[in-house]
Amino acid sequence: MKVGILGAGVTGLSIGRLLNKKYTVEILERKDVSGGIARTRKVDGIAYHQIGGHCFNSKYKEVLDFVFNEVLPIDQWNRIKRKSTIHFKQHEIDYPIEYSINQIFQFDKELAIRMTSDFLTANNDLESTNLDEWFRNKFGNALAEEYFIPYNTKIWGKEPKDMSPVWVEDKLPIPDKFTFFEGLINTAKDNMPHAEFYYPKSNDQNTFLDALASGLDIRFNTQINSIKRKNTKWIVNDLYEYDILINTMPLNMIPSFIDECPQDVLDAAAKLKYNKVSNILWKSELTDKTWSYHPDKTTVFHRYIHIGSFYKPTSGYTITEAIGDKTEDELIESGKKDPFLKDPIAYNKSEHAYVVFDENYASCTSFVKNYLKKMGIYTIGRFGEWQYYNMDICIKSSLELAKQLNAELK
Image 1 (cartoon, rainbow, N blue to C red):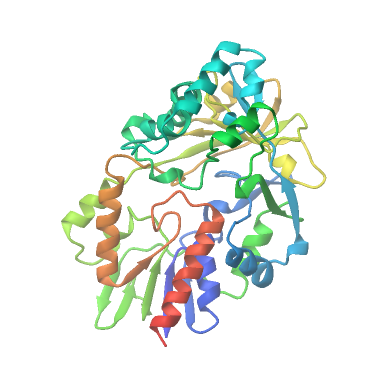
Image 2 (image 1 turned 60 degrees about the vertical axis):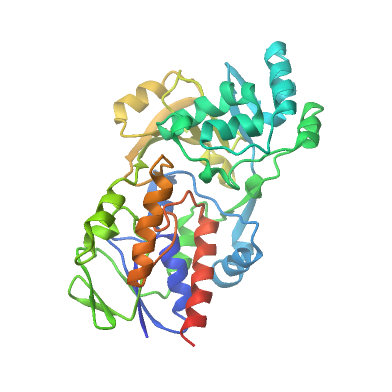
């Protein structure tokens, strides 16, 4: 049984490693390295995360067991406490904001009281038809209008009222009224799975990615240009032949490579939207913060990733990230307004970074996925499922598919 996997990102490597135990596996990767958007690039000896700031943790035991028992042992990781802040109305407060109302009270008593009143009277049981409503129903109008709506407008490049709320599941800490009150008296803490996280002791995420890729047959520099079904086989690029085909490449792209793909599927795929990100690696002041969020319009950046705080020993390096196609000069000009940022070191502009959950999201993703399922192509991962997945959920999807395939192919 021969399995072909399209894409050697975290998902492709994970499912490849899982299936490689029983089947012949080939992974086709368009770049000359594996790791996808989690891959770092060495710049002046620093592991530069060109898209996001990827770290690892999971609430799923099976994911932790897979990583620590089969990929990179736990003694090869540092465990790091997440310490995130929000730059809010020219003040720095702790993340998440709903646990920091007492800090807001120190500089804007009226706003803090309004946030408290609105949160305690919000109706969490109301159905939300869009992301704007979801924030209001969960957090109340004041928190929604002062933080969640402007910040999400900035990071998605769209008004939340024009977006679906489906992406937020497990992404935000949602306090009930009791934990919210604990936050008022400064006892509640961020208890999301990534309140603590793991980062390789090598100070480079590539250590994990290379361990994940070890022993796999990866055909680098392979651009997909055709996928055909011939009898019971999948033929890719008129060269590679597989019994099973697994896709991890972007859902908006794969239909265009499938022979005789129906036009309505191509049309649905074309409606799937995503954002690019542009960022700068800076030499910065030393900080014990891990992330800083910037909802205001005074900077083009929506967050700082203090990558130097991931390292042992810590060092003064920060990645500033902006949504969209921004020039290096534009980012540097914005960054120079902040004395915390010292010298720009490197610049990157991505392609696919974050899928956009707009009004077409639900119908178009379902339509394309149903077509691929009917064709017999498995599609998983952040871009293969067109979801806002962290690394651990990509691994979880791989574990689930491997279990499914092993059951089907008995």
